Length: 477
Image (cartoon, rainbow, N blue to C red):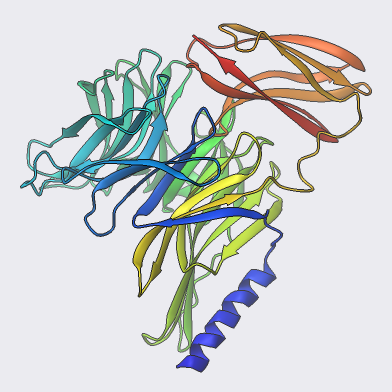
């Protein structure tokens, strides 16, 4: 048995060696008695993490400092069970969605929303029960300009098939309207985006006239369906996650393929993600699963998942989490195959505003059971530039903080084609300020922040062929 286990570890190492490596340096790691499902950077550079306690399934939110110190954890037990997504609100408080129960004795798990103050105090919790005693959960949540919320997830009725479920609430979680989507299928809503004064929802499922697979749905803020579309090339595949690719599109993670689509769901490009294969026979089975994707500030993306390997029949097996970083052309920049710390899955990974990455997942060992896993990476080397010459870069953002218009002054060593893009702290494109040819020397542009952008910290990035520069700004409404 010992010989077999050693061989598996050697095989895993060989798989990692055959792929790209050179991951950024690890600054710190943290383990905790939970499962970490989502991680986001806060306005002041802390990390808020959503998950659940493995031993009592209490829905829990954690806050970690930039150095990895746990600042607080907040949970409502036993009524709230799992948090799948968490965001920071304009006020600085946090809101999470997942599933919970209305009282201690209930076994009806339903979509719930949980609000927490900036210092970790529970403010309120709402559970949205189904009339037929079915089950439901929330998978994503966004804040709207009026302070209300948009939530998406899934309804699982007692009779019939699952349906994608979209809710709009006021700032206190009281329902304004709900909508269902899908046909006779296991339909679910995975992500919701507030774009151009409406809601775009990523779903997995089918309509009567379409094949199963990823669909985009568009609603106005009153809940009127504007359009819905499938993506024919992805018919029959399983949507895992989606993130903004630019101000005009998305990166869509489907099984082990990454597709770039525009805001209406039309395909722009299509490529294989992780090297995925399943080999079933007399000797072993190998599987690679992709769980999450998020955009990076250079127009690329970083995604994550789980690798599984088992000897057959029913022999020893191994799992480990992985992360892969690609640029905007789909070129692999680095990968991290986490074969240490007993890491089995990485569910969420984000690029940070000051460079580097934060990743969240879980580990498992016979001694300690299941624990949450958090890993902080240093900024990349050899990718970030911004050192083209002493005359290149953003020289001034004024006024900063600003309430409506921001002046952006930058220098170029020679005439060049440049772009200036504003990102939020999650790496999503807030606005493309400029994309064109500018002369050598100093230039100044004015960015008028769209009305739908909330207060918070944003990143202004200047890009040219030989490098880029990033500066922070703060919008105060």
